[in-house]
Image (cartoon, rainbow, N blue to C red; front, side, top):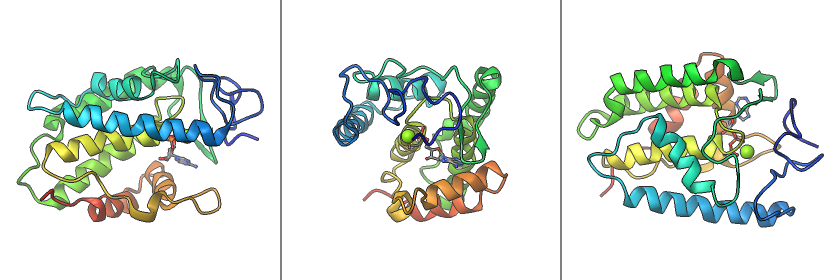
Length: 208
Ligand SMILES: Nc1ncnc2c1ncn2[C@@H]1O[C@H](COP(=O)(O)OP(=O)(O)O)[C@@H](O)[C@H]1O
Ligand SMILES: [Mg+2]
């Protein structure tokens, strides 16, 4: 059974939620453990490489995905080539994906890639992050790991600005196939960023 309602066998082993992977791991728990380890490695690598010259552009965003999950997946760092829906939501159609992504990152560039929030009010920073978070959620550019890579992206932006990684607390905890982050994502796609803003605002804390 797959949570995807379209093209579900494209990157997954037949009739499973398990993406085809370079290690040919077919056990979900083993694969998830491997993914957790790779994600931690990604956090470490990109955090160590943060500098004043870091630019949070589209190239960087794709690089987060490629470097973090490239050991395991051929689709790492590449945008998807099929349409994807979850629940009643259809994410950005493939034919608009490249252009929509360019538009989002152009806007982010005009916002200075959110590099100048060190001494601005937290509320302003949270509003910007939740705006772009919603944009990237609706884009859903990768086959998999959109949630994790999008959060990694904003965690690096947060760290750059002297904040801890955003603390999502219990919002990522699955309750019956759902969680507060997903609910906020659904609101986002309906044009309501409030819930996402509250999650981000609550999760932002200045580093000591
Ligand atoms: N029903 C839904 N409606 C809107 N967005 C959703 C829905 N389900 C999941 N999402 C969004 O998609 C993300 C999960 O995408 P996915 O590519 O599977 O990333 P990951 O594997 O890192 O969780 C969630 O974090 C959420 O933002
Ligand atoms: Mg997933």
